[in-house]
Length: 139
Image 1: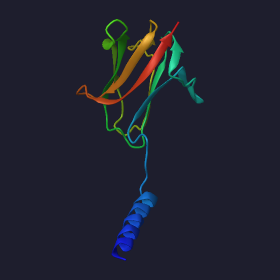
Image 2: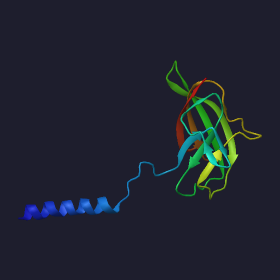
Image 3: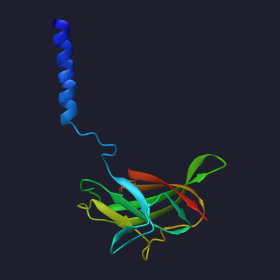
């Protein structure tokens, strides 16, 4: 009888925690890409694009708490199989922002000039990774 009670207690605990806890695949900022961000929002979301200018999007459920950030591109070297630094862009954002788009502006040429696989990072003012994503650029 004690074994049955113990099994029932374990089952009850699993059921209680399973019903009360939320499981999320992504619990932090997400970085993704689109062709442009316009008056209707994001246009052309994908992870595969032709060469040219793109917009890097970052979305989070909470305020990121950042003010000076960088977007860094690293390109996969097909010969070595390692990612190598490609470009970096500096931006100022508001700490309260949860949803940010980074696009071409007067000081940042956010273009992917050559085909390849790129790892793109959002870095804080200390150069630490906040979030990252992969993108493939084709001709």
